[in-house]
Amino acid sequence: MDTRVWIEALRRHVIPALGDGWELAGDSLVRAPVGWTAARVVPQPSAYGPAFFLHAQVQLLAEPEPESYTCGFRLGRWEAPATLAGYSSIAAQVVDAVVSRAVPFFDRYATLDGYLSHLRERLAELDPGQEWIDVLLDEELAYANLLLGDLPAAEVAAGYAERAAEQNRRDPQPLDWVEEAAGRVARVVAAARRDHGEAREILAGHARANARQLRLTGPTAPDLGR
Image (cartoon, rainbow, N blue to C red; front, top):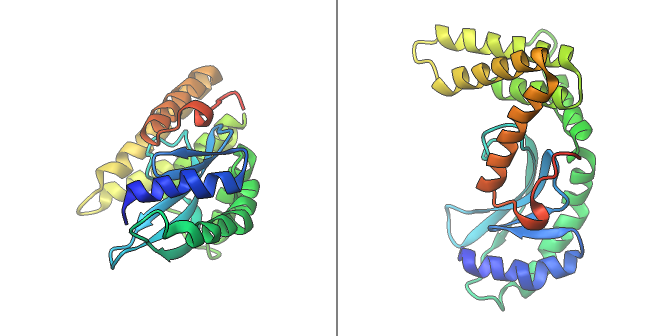
């Protein structure tokens, strides 16, 4: 997949067809405005031949790992043309996939309330009695609840994050990133107990750093007052 050709196809064919509210950020489509969540359509080159996949992703920008997300799905797979002219028919298919499948998904999940509903749906998928050990999910739950003003719910999520860290410490080969995530959650929740504004500013720092990594600038710069 020639990324330069893909980006030009987005500029010339896809974004004009999608209309207002869609912007280019690097090689991805972003629906503006962006707040604490970013709704993105992201390409992934295939490892097998000149083809690519598109993924619809909603990212909680307060989570400080820009490539980590739990809310998304694959829109489809396409052959990657070598020239811009080759994208004329593919662009129409991409637009149709975005409008018919990505947009309803973004409408449902690309707000703080919507993202929290996604996280609760993830929890509901667990089998009865199944132990919940997923530190990234815990971190997102803690931050989404804090941003929505629910400190008690954030504290519950922080407790589960610490359980994940305790289990990780018992592993013969513990993972550093699990400990780091649990430590972040503990620090943010401790800050929220002192002052909600202090915790919110920590999360805003995560969001601003993610925005730089994801090239969310200009019309796609996050408005953290939303």
